[in-house]
Amino acid sequence: MEFLRTVVAPLLPYIQVILSVLLVAAILLQQRGSSLGGAFGGDNFSAAFNKRRGGELFLFRFSVVVAVLFALAALINLFV
Image 1 (tube, helix red, strand yellow):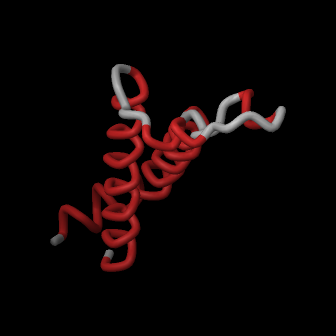
Image 2 (tube, helix red, strand yellow):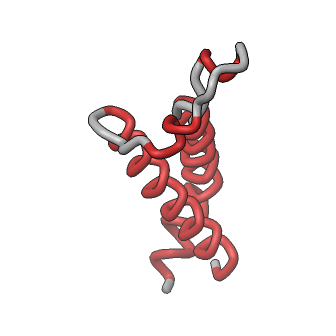
């Protein structure tokens, strides 16, 4: 427990800032479900049921991992 107070506690605000910036960037880089056809009145019903592949899947998983790490950092900050 002493390790958390002496080593992790001073670094925790910087870790949270880095994780929050990464989380915001990962969320903003994800594509929306609608395409340009929906803006002109076209039916874009099938776009909601696409499967994530490649970079989109990586970005989705990355944002989930960063969100979990951010939540853990917040809990650690609560108890330290």
